[in-house]
Image 1 (cartoon, rainbow, N blue to C red):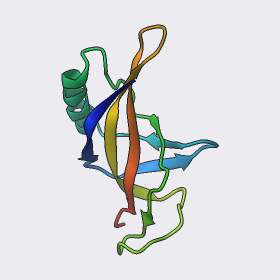
Image 2 (image 1 turned 90 degrees about the vertical axis):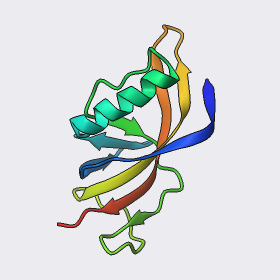
Image 3 (image 1 turned 45 degrees about the vertical axis):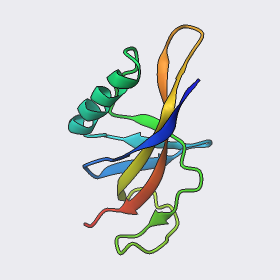
Amino acid sequence: MKFLKSMILYQLSDELRIIKTKFNFLIKDIHIGDINLLNTLFAKLNSKLKMSSKDVFMNARNVEFLNSNGEPTVFQQGENWKIGIAIQGFKTSSTGLVTPIWKIVSAQIADS
């Protein structure tokens, strides 16, 4: 694992869906513009690091979920969310697959 000295914060541009799974969250339908920008950033961290799907799993430990007014709320599946992420580094598997170490750091219900 390679951790960055300072994590990189990134606010995804479009609303998206979040699905709670047993151990983390599935982020659905990430906008292609965000994927392209993240891939540009990832290429600077490691040439093998690339995001190729619109759906990714992320940890959301210690994130405060907010309603559309910015007040704390419980996670609500089925809502559209605006999220911010923290890229903390990357890890390489025994097969050579390079994946990001990242997590959700902010989540707010998008205005309808």
